[in-house]
Every structure is written in C-alpha cells, then in structure tokens.
Image 1: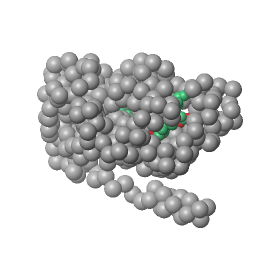
Image 2 (image 1 turned 180 degrees about the vertical axis):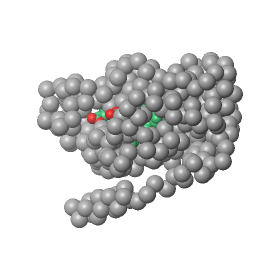
Image 3 (image 1 turned 90 degrees about the vertical axis):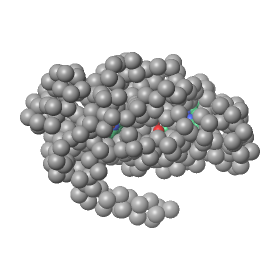
Length: 341
Ligand code: HEC
Ligand code: HEC
C-alpha cells in the first residue's frame, strides 16, 4: 500500500512538473462572447440574485472567458480553471493544487458546484455572499499572485478585446466591480440540478436501484449524514462550520479549533481526494472515518459523539447513494467549457 501511495505521489509530482496543457491565450485571435441560457427556467432552486440582473447571460458569458484566461495571473500561466476543472466538477484531482510558479496550495481545492446557494465560503466558512470572496484567489500569492487587483484591471484594460467586451456587456469600461460581477455571475451559474438524485426527486425515486434506495435511507437515517449535509445542496443550510474529529491535534485549525466548512456533497463522487487537506483518496475512506475514525476532540460536533454503526455492506450502500449526486450534464455542458479551445 505504502509503495502504491509513493508511486501515485511520484506520478502526481511528475504531472505537476509538466508544462500546463492549457493553450496560451495570446494565441487566440479574438475574444468572442458566446451567449447561452445560463439560468434556465427549469432550475428548481429559488432564484439567486444573479438571475435577476438584466443581461445576466451576457455577464456570465464574459465571466466564463475571464475564468479560463491565464492572463488573470501575475505571469500569465494560471487561470481559475487550472484548479477548478469542469470534468472534476470545478475542483481538481490533486490533494493540493499547483498555482503560480508551481507553488502548492495549502488546502484541497473546493468544487464550485452550486456555490451561489452556500451560506459559508472557502474551507474557513467565511460568511457573506460569494461576490465578497471571488477576487481573493487573484491576489492570493500561491494561486494567481496579482497582489493588487487594481493592477489586473489596468492589465486587462490594455487588452483591446476586453475593452470592447466590457463595453458590449456593461456599456462601461472595465473596473474591479465589473470584473467581480462577471466572475461571480459565471460561478453562480454553475448549478447542478440534473443528477440521478434530482431526477429521482421528481419521479418518487423510481429511477433508483434497490441499493441506492437503501443507501439513501442510511444517509438520511441512521448514518446521520443529513444532520450536516442537508437541503437541496447537501451542504449545511444554517451552520457555517463543524469539527468532525479528523485529528486530536489539527495542524490546520481552519476557522479555529478544527472547524471547517460543511462542504456540499453534490458531484462528490468525482471530486476526490477529500477533506480540507485532501487526506482521503476515496469515499470508502471517508465513510470509514465516520464509522471508526472519529477522534474525541473537545470541539467534536455533538452529532458525531455517538458512534455510527454501519456494517460492511451498509457502507457500500451509502457510497452507492453518494454516486447518485453526480450531474453528468453539468460536467459536459458546453456553456461551462473552456472558450479558448
Ligand atoms: C492554484 C489553484 C487555484 C486557483 C488558480 C484558483 N483557485 Fe479557487 N480554490 C482553490 C483552493 C485550494 C480553494 C480552497 C481554499 C480554502 O478554502 O482555503 C479554492 C476555493 C475557491 C472558492 C470557494 C468555494 C467554496 O465552496 O466555498 C471559490 C469561490 C473559488 N475558489 C473561486 C476561484 C476563482 C474565481 C478563481 C480565479 C480567479 C480561482 N478560484 C482560482 C484553488 C484555486
Ligand atoms: C457534524 C456535521 C457532519 C456530519 C454529521 C457529517 N459530515 Fe461530512 N463533512 C462535514 C465537514 C465539516 C466536512 C469537512 C471537514 C474537513 O475537511 O475538515 C465534511 C466532509 C465530508 C466529505 C468530503 C467533502 C469534500 O469535498 O472533501 C464527505 C464525502 C462527507 N463529509 C460525507 C459525509 C457522510 C457520508 C456522512 C454520514 C456518514 C457525513 N459526511 C456526516 C460535516 C459533517
């Protein structure tokens, strides 16, 4: 096992050292706005603020270009999509992601699925709306390194294409505010509502196998998962963070005392590795943690202080259920894909 881990680690290291596969955006001749229906009427969740903006589809389309443009980083090497990849539900497959100049992030990349509906943001569970935080990665020295976002505004305003795009969409020149609004609107549009679970909700779960149904009962019943991962988005609807007893002594204290954001479980089967430090490679390890790995930390959430009893086959049923939260339509939807390809 140790050897396997070492080999995998080796491969990750080798991959990390390869030059980025993203095409250099300077090769792109002109930036064109591809306008799709980003906030479709059939989305069953209550309206977000971004849906009511006039013009929201054009704003999201501009946000999509920015999201995939390497020029948003200090040395033109990294875009948001380097770490938030569509095929991984806008997270990536690494324990820690590679940022500017091959620096590693100190935490595992969060998926951007249904972010506009979350009550807390980033692993520390910051409060507020996503637009209060969306520009942080740009100035983060590990991620994109534009220490002063205003320098980025100046940099982009020297690119003719962006000047005309911002004017086309907003009738105004580029500014920090409009940059924020565009990126936020695109991220807010990353809404998953077509998973097997969503379809089941409409049909009374007649589309579920017997195993998936049994797993669903465990999730909402004796496995107690829904005490924290609840509501339409399987995150926490009210509480911002929790301590789930990963360690006796946390190296990373998160929001303090080992509290971390209760992440959404939408698309969870394809966002491994798991937890703020990506310590678990698979869902089997995650479930095993809840069954037999919980440490008696003084801040451990009360829900988890009584042991969760699950047999070997029940653990598998729970995982079968978690797989029904994958939204394959979102993962291949062209409106979220790289516009530079
Ligand atoms: C080098 C990798 C990397 C890049 C580049 C990157 N991110 Fe992230 N992103 C992360 C990591 C790691 C986290 C979790 C960090 C934490 O919470 O401490 C994260 C978290 C987030 C979150 C919070 C999600 C949640 O569920 O709370 C948002 C929003 C986000 N990033 C947006 C962006 C945007 C927009 C860009 C581009 C401007 C971007 N990121 C670029 C790695 C990256
Ligand atoms: C007390 C609240 C709570 C309960 C109960 C709970 N979780 Fe969690 N869950 C969390 C928190 C908080 C995290 C993030 C912890 C961290 O990274 O330090 C998390 C993380 C996860 C992750 C990893 C998410 C990611 O993006 O890396 C999975 C998968 C998960 N939980 C599944 C479950 C399952 C399955 C159950 C039921 C057996 C469950 N959780 C019960 C609060 C809870």
